[in-house]
Length: 414
Ligand SMILES: [Zn+2]
Image (cartoon, rainbow, N blue to C red; front, side, top):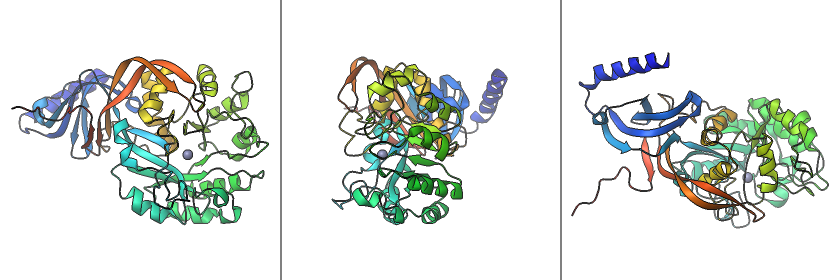
């Protein structure tokens, strides 16, 4: 079936090729394409026309490309989706992640890691979303999607994230209705009270808008029961972030004292609850990640929780977090799947996260460096690894936005 498809494609290509010189904007030649959605894991060529993927085939004539990229020895993947970041940077110095200095600028971190889509998870609430859209989303080349915080102000810190009377589901839903291309769900974060009201408020917004919610499970002392959250309050499709965090005094971890993944966690994942890495500056411990991966408790989304407190610590960037999963023994194909297609599905955006013909041409080219590497977690402990993903080129909507070694550049001649 597949062979016949390729023959037809080749025939179509040959019959049209002579008449149409330089049909394609970019032809990427000879790379190892990993496109989990379309079940591709092979040496293939890719062609784009303007901002769209035009053809994926075994052999595309380079003469048909206005630009030709030699991708031999590189991996070619869909543009990476970072499912958990904070991008509402601004100058309000006391406002943390909301229009403050703890958030970061998307384009400064995305493309150099192969990332073309970032999901800001709750930095803005219904009241502050317009500012976020104007100064971050509209000002970035990176595609930015957003979860709206159930707290009206967003992640302004302190009492602003604890004020239940400012958690108004219908107001959050209104933003989702007004911006359906941007808003992909809702977020509850950092709530440290002992009642379930805020969780149920964010889920109410999710139900009204038919969108998922993401829970950063606060910091209640003693902690609220995780089983109750996962099996009683959340719906299939809702997301639990910081899955490999380990600070048992204030949050129930997914593993017990012996490192065994709790059965109800696996049950929740089976029932459709999604789990997101959300590495961050305090939420990724080898102590939790190593036994979890060994026991098959894997992320639906590998993600950074990028902000000023994580960017220069153990997290670093998306390529580094993806490389951590290689170090954990996860096959590359699986790492790519959990950084492209699965997060696209998690946010109900099947138009993203693949190299399907006709979709927007978001493409990443990676090399893998071999050597002796150390990967640090949030406690400062190191896991050794031998492979590191390096983003060589990133294409966003058909435009080359990152070219580490001048793959697309003409050579200097004196
Ligand atoms: Zn976060």
